[in-house]
Amino acid sequence: MMNVSSVHPARRARLLATGAAAVTVVLWASAFVSIRSAGAVYSPGALALGRLLSGALVLGVVLVVRREGLPPRSAWRGIAISGVLWFGLYSVALNWGEQQVDAGTAALVVNIGPILIALLGARLLGDPMPPRLLAGMAVSFAGAVTVGLSMSSGGGSSVLGVVLCLLAAVGYAGGVVAQKPALGRASALQVTTFGCLVGAVLCLPFAGQLVHETAGASVSATLNMVYLGVFPLALAFTTWAYALARTTASRMGATTYAVPALVVLMSWLALGEVPGLLTLAGGALCLAGVAVSRSRARAAAPETAPEPQPEREPDSV
Image (cartoon, rainbow, N blue to C red; front, side, top):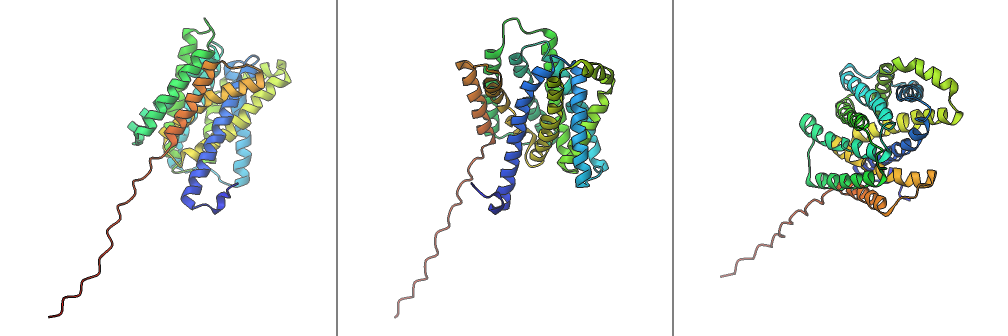
């Protein structure tokens, strides 16, 4: 096993960012399994608020222990926008959307998010759009479409559900692009903690529903809600912010195309849902596209200058 601390600093930073992105993708994929369980008991707004409060509590404790304090004033605009769009709007819209459409349709619609991130990142942040990134996104999107179509059940969609998932994708993309500049002025922990708090404040109107539904909910449903707040939110959003601070929004967005493939695997292992060949093929395309989008073109080898020839001694006369 390679010792990361002994690696060249630049390569070590890339390895840590890649590892953080991998943790994020795995935990976000696991959220789909937990939402399926908790969403059967909790309404969309109550589930979002309970998740955000659980995450904010954990993040607040860590922030106090690390003594990071408040983020600088210059970071608050990005934190507030990402808190409203991503932590708040995205959470409620996705929870509600998944109650209206099947999982395959939801995954398909939400996965336009990385494309929106790339377009917004190029327009607002000046992110580059290298050919490898575009090619990888195209391959992954084809895989997401394949997974979505293979998992969709006939007649399981509704116009409202599709609109809600589309709204979630827009909130996700806008939140990521707004979060990127804030990460240049505040730490990943600060940006995640206060973005989560902004989202929780936005969802406070659902507090009455949360109290009422928690009183009648099963222990497993409540634990799933807490899990969603502690791991896919508090931990995964922090590792996401850490990785996003060290790469472009477009490249990070493309990484999340691995989520549908992992959801298929987790559903297979945890729920006994055996995927079909078409689903497996789509998952493989998702992962292949991520690999292409995160690969780096090899730098051309510099031309070596010809070795200087020793000066020839003049012929004696």
